[in-house]
Amino acid sequence: MKATKLLTTASIGALLFGFAAASQAANWRYAHEEYEGDVQDVFAYAFKDYIEENSDHSVQVFRFGELGESEDIMDQTLSGILQFVNQSPGFTGALIPSAQIFFIPYLMPTDTETVLEFFEESKAINEMFPEIYAEHGLELLKMYPEGEMVVTTDEPVSSPEDFNNKKIRVMTNPLLSETYDAFGATPTPLPWGEVYGGLQTGIIDGQENPIFWIESGGLYEVSPHLTFTSHGWFTTAMMANKDFFDGLPEEDQQLIRDAADAAYDHTIEHIRGLAEESLDKIMEACDECTVTRLDEEQIQAFKERAPQVEEAFLEMTDETGAKLLEQFKEDLEAVSNDSD
Ligand code: 6CS
Image (tube, rainbow, N blue to C red):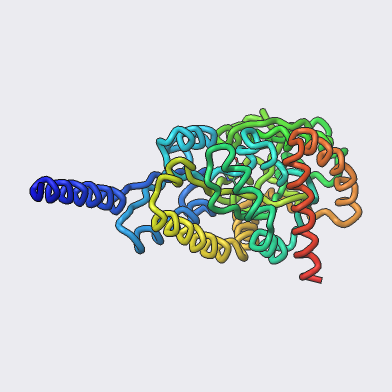
């Protein structure tokens, strides 16, 4: 009896030790959509560093192209091959319709500090979105901004009329197509890997992205006319496979949340001033590049077309989208009042 009890205790101990050892020595796989030194890479490496400095776990980071396109890394995360993924709502919007809220033009402010405060404080971002992503098998760990959207084209653009017959590449969510349709252009949804070549060969006439990406991806070489339309910010999101996350011990879940917080703080510091630095680099490298900053009157001509996109968002997203939009507006109102 005594021997049996001892054995049982030993086996339970071994089992517990085994689990603890497995949990201590895990190697987690994390894929994102960008290249070395880009914003998502800065986030991923800050996350990895925090995990590795504060536990025995390790994180293996995969950059754009190593495991396929954005859609591929999301599929791999949902099937459990990857534990973490950074995918932007520009692509997630095809899977989670309400993530398309970021593509309602002129909803977001353009001033960096107001945008950052919004991401920090927003109930829609920090409380509602995690619940929405959870319904799709994803544990949303952070949503964060990468930079103001800037349109690049083959000719200078300053009005919806200038967009006539221009094929503008958009990320693959239906609402962004509505936006460019409303702006007077011909939206052309494409995955990232086809953008540079598409611009080079004239399959598309333009695209939109934050300045750092236009610089780091060399997009200005093949799409040299930059227009600041003030219509939105590029937002991205970092998440885990929910079954994986839910199966972790409490202590590892906390470690992951803390690592995401640390990566967020580090990344926000990184993006401060990044757009200005990147624009300087572009202007230094490119003689033919032009920069157009729309004035209030020109912005108004685009802004007038925003309500139809908001309408389309509500049609695509039922009650969830309506509630999210209401909260989003409330949160934006709160931060813009703070900055008055
Ligand atoms: O336009 C895109 O598809 C890409 N833009 C950025 C800023 N990050 C990744 C994304 O795939």
